[in-house]
Amino acid sequence: MTGTPAPAAQAPASAGDGAPLLEARHVSKYFGSVIALRDVSLQVHAGEVTCVLGDNGAGKSSLIKTLSGVFPPDEGEILVDGQPIRFSGPREARAHGIATVFQDLATVPMMSVWRNFFLGQEPTRSFGPVRFLDQGRAKDVMRVEMAKMGINVSDPNQYVGTLSGGERQAVAISRAVYFGARVLILDEPTSALGVRQSGIVLRYVLQARDMGRGVILITHNPHHAYPVGDRFVLLKLGQVMGSFTKDQIDVAQLTQMMAGGEELAQLSHELQRVSGDLPAARAAAQALAEDAARTV
Ligand SMILES: Nc1ncnc2c1ncn2[C@@H]1O[C@H](COP(=O)(O)OP(=O)(O)OP(=O)(O)O)[C@@H](O)[C@H]1O
Ligand SMILES: [Mg+2]
Image (cartoon, rainbow, N blue to C red; front, side):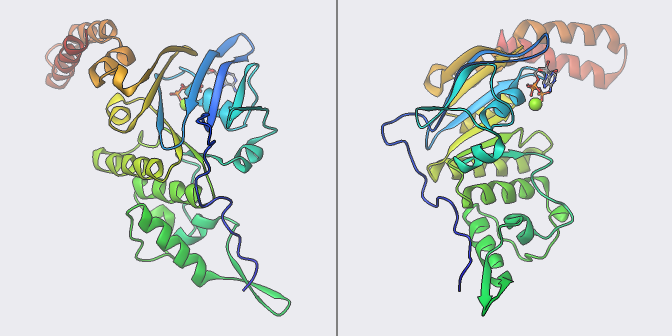
């Protein structure tokens, strides 16, 4: 049997000297007059989860795009294993083991689970000069890798579009890990998911971490970030509002920094003003008031 593409790195390579797997140092990015990022620094270590939190427009996607080679930073530098690098594009970032999983673009709905897992990198088998797709092996590999994430795929021919959002994320995550990702960047993997599916995705994050990968988890939700995160970077209007290790902050402080207790209180006040007799709006205002009271 020949031609089976071996994954780039089954064992998680670590920098050895304790340097972060991936680092942004004083990165700035401008779109005309818009400052998407200003002086942002972040580190991703092997076997750790770095959470990037921030509201809409905070610069989270811009940050991961500079880290995954979509565009270079205008200022500052990106380092891999402590060495400064300038990626020519996402392909070069991937070759360095940096894999980004985008929520909606990660899988192809009208394609089977096993084809999605390989997406053009299927193992092959030779019979004389002719080379065949090794479907049996592909399905076996996919089953084993998905099982490592705690998912049992009963039918590898099932369309990915028929899987739940959480399971689709699992396909994308296990594929990235199998093909050698040392750093896994997940862009809002839980934003479209319910409580249970979010929990499942967060468990994959921990699995990837326990396999020695470095993970960047982007989220709006401090309650998703805190239980799995080792480091937390809070972005607001393109700047780092705070950067903490887990022992430096608790979930209440993280929530307060994210939402801003004062902003919540103001929102609650506005809702109360417009809610009139609507019970749902009154309940929302009450919930916000309670959140605000908890966080200030
Ligand atoms: N290609 C672009 N051209 C112009 N402005 C851009 C571009 N990409 C991002 N921006 C701007 O940069 C800022 C940060 O955007 P970014 O997408 O990084 O935010 P985000 O934190 O990912 O937000 P969201 O939570 O909504 O995804 C925004 O003001 C946005 O309008
Ligand atoms: Mg974004």
